[in-house]
Image (cartoon, rainbow, N blue to C red; front, side, top):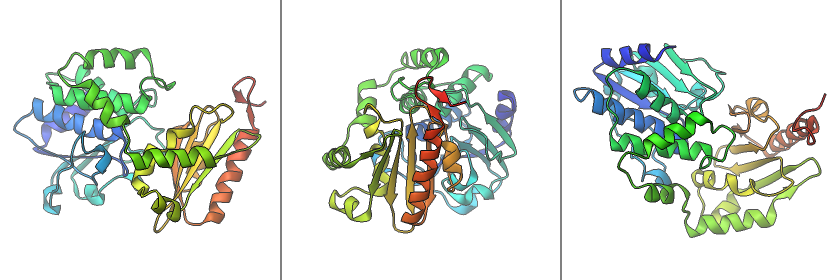
Length: 320
């Protein structure tokens, strides 16, 4: 899939609707809204919308547009940062005329009429900036630069994750030359409310750690209610255990009304294959899934233990 083909499709349509995945993170919003701002600045005559459910903790980045079903007719649909169709926020994408997928996750579900997937990119926001640099005659404004920078920062953990490359840092260096408040952006992404901080304290007091390096956290509806934390807000908690020595892989089980949300993270062992078994997927070291009983939670734990038993701590690779 070439950047030129994506630009050609954008130029052919008067109406463009941009989606991303459910329960968005900064990269989902940064790539979605950053692309929207890029298109609007470059083609001011076009109608461009961003859709999906707002996350109150991230509306400082961008708020979604509210549009009627008929707007999707004869529209170009672009879906950012979403590996599989089940995770696309707003199923009305199916009503559009043409679908483009832009993503940096493993291409387990190659949907769309056009697709650009780059698993070497640190983030989909990095890809959108790549699109700007390699397409012809585009205009990047301060708002787009802020969104793309925020997406890159969020998905690289402030440039600490292994996905950060020379290209990532170069792009970030170019984006910070635009006029936006980096301090305010960082505060929006990383500052937390007091109830989230108290929940982090609970997690640090109650996580488990076994001899294989697996840590498990179970957040039932009762616990979430006690700390006044919504399931949507638990995305701010999953990194809590990342700095603890001895933990190789950790899993959060978040009980919702009709399912148990599974959030998986790892410092080396590949965990997206486990996620794929339970209605999920994602990056090799950061994935999510959905299950429907605590019995299934035990199965996830056993699968993770099997994955860890194959991991050689000495070499940081699979055991031979």
